[in-house]
Image 1: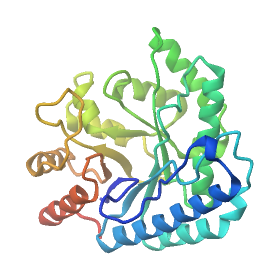
Image 2: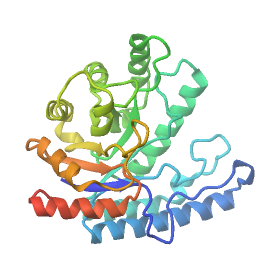
Image 3: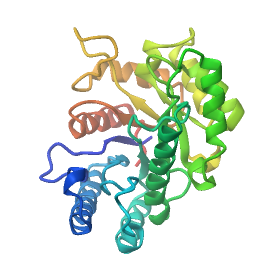
Image 4: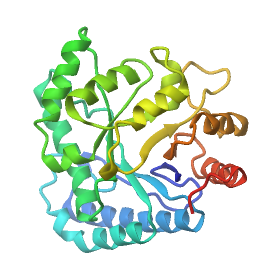
Length: 297
C-alpha cells in the first residue's frame, strides 16, 4: 500500500504547476516555466521519498499550453533528458504515478471540438509518462463525463471515443466513479465494454451508489485491474462537517481513515488522499498505516 497526495506540496517554496496567461505565450517563457516546473517536481519527489509517500498525482500544468494549438514547440525533444532522469528516479524508488486531466476532458461530449481538445490533452499527459519510460501502472484518471439527458447514449459515446484513442493512451486510462452522475455500477458497465480499470473513490461512492457496501464496492473495482495495471489506485476523502454534501474534509480524520482501512478486507490498494492540507494528511496517514502494520516499505 502506498500513500500519496495530488500535484502540489503546500510546504515547499515552489510549485510544479506554474503557468501563465495565453496572451503572454512565447517559446522562451514556455521553456523557462517548464524547466522550473520539472525542477520543482524533482524536489517534490525527493521530499516524498524521504517521507515514504510513494504515490504522486503529477500536475496537468507542468508544460503550459501543451495541448493548445498555440504551442508548436517540440517540448518533448527539448525536455527528453530531464523527463528520462525523472522517470529513472521514480522507478528507482518504486513510486506510483498518476495524472488527472482537467474537467474539460470529456470523452462522451456530443461536441466534436470538446472531443478534439480532450484527445489532445490526454495525448500530452500520456507523452509525459511515455517519455519518462514509466510502465502501464502509471495511469491517466478521467470521469465518465456528462449524461446529456440520456445516460445509455452517453455511455455509448464514451465507449466509441475510447476506441478512437491512440493505443498508448488507452493503456493508461482509468475511469473514476463520481458523486453525481456515474456510479460504480455505471463504471462497471463501461469497463465491461472497454476493459478500462476503475479507479475507486470511496467518498464519491458514499454520495452515489447502488446499495453496494464499501467492501463490496472495493472488491468489484479491484477486479477490473489486471497485473499489468498494477494494484488498484483509489482516491480517499471524507465529508467536511457542516458543509455541502460532497465537499472534501480539510484534514484527515484519523478514526474515519482507520475505519476505512478495515473495510479494505485485505485488499492491497494505493491511496491518493484528496484532502486540502495535502502532505500533512499524507504524513499522518503513513503514521496510521505504520501503527496498523499495513504500510508497504
